[in-house]
Length: 96
Image 1: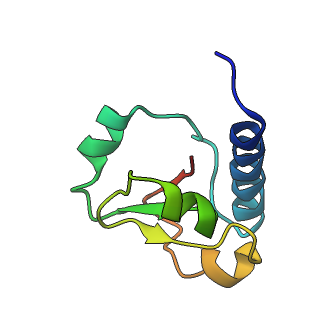
Image 2: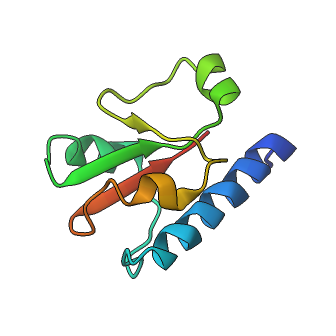
């Protein structure tokens, strides 16, 4: 599958965010990609936090928004927002 430069940059950004979150003490032993069907099954689980880490521009331009997702600035220092979320349970980061 061919990806555009912005898609590749966002993928790298998401990977970097995962690394920074791991430094904050979150376990990333089970980092995996999931399908939208798998995500839909998780949305009713109160232990799952869905975090939209798209840039403001990418979020505004998109018609796709996940109901209940929390938006965090991917360019902000991860320490400032990662500590708001429980270290138990699942955290789903998504971007473009």
